[in-house]
Amino acid sequence: MRQAILTLQHIQKKFGTKEVLQDLNLTVEKGEILSLVGPSGSGKTTILKLMNQLVRQTSGTILFNNQDIQTQDIRHVRWQMGYVLQEIALFPNMTVAENIAVIPEMMRWNKNEIKEKTWELLQEVGLDPDVYAPRFPHELSGGEQQRIGILRALIFAPEILLMDEPFSALDPLSRTALQDLVLDLYAKRKMTIVLVTHDMEEALKMGSRIAVIHEGVIQQLSKPSAIVLQPANDFVREFFKQTNQKVTLEEKIILSFIYQVALNQPVPGQPTLNVQQNLGQLIRAVEKAEVVNIEKEEECLGSVNRSLLLELLVAALGQHEVAH
Image (cartoon, rainbow, N blue to C red; front, side):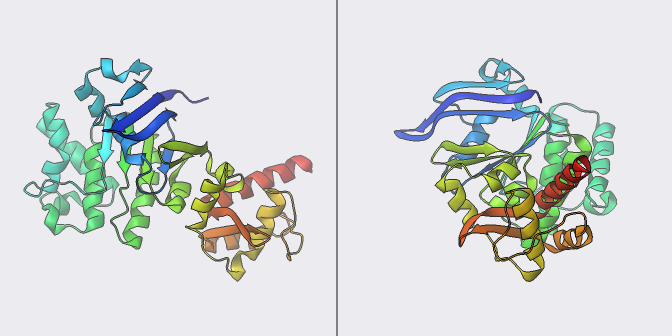
């Protein structure tokens, strides 16, 4: 069992007379990506701002590394929490290198150390330091600016990275590239990330666990596979429907696999699938698929993305080996 890095206990938050969060309980585990997903106004960003105390809870307790966050030096706490916003908040009058160096300079790092770390990070995200370090934000694309925003949050190696809809302002290609970049950085650095998004597909792609939030209440907190196959209520099920895509002919074989392996039932109108015998077809279909809908009696039960399909496929092959 993973260790908790942040724990929110019985959190209530009011803005004036409006109750935004009501008796919210949530734990962020070290080394996970926790996706907070829900419609606009559901309370996702408020939860994120409570985590680094940009806003204070009306009641309840927040523990950071098992200590009440309000008893700790808040500046020190925030240095341990990187923060990446939807609005790419780079200082326009500073170069890329100067933007990345803001926090290290406040922490009085050695200048040579700052430069060395800046060059290293730029190379890590595919930006040539000699080309990009002297540039100003207006000389960068949106995707490049957001890369710099991420590096600025990572340079001091925070314990946790808070991300508030960091990809939503980007075009689809840049969005996918930045998602993949964050997943790569997460895998290399074993980071803890809390990601706010309103996009269920993004939550499924990025999250180790997903908290689905509506009107200040967590409707479901589960692994992606559990949310896909067992939505807790009508809201979660309906929220999936909004992001669904139609099933293509190439994906029908995957549907058969999902129904048989995950739901333990045949898919309507599809032949029985032998995972071992159809392994090649399955792998090729998974490689082509982005999102597959699961339907029963014309009702959509949820969506499965590529990474989850691979997870289910590996699990199915493991079950097959045990059985034989």
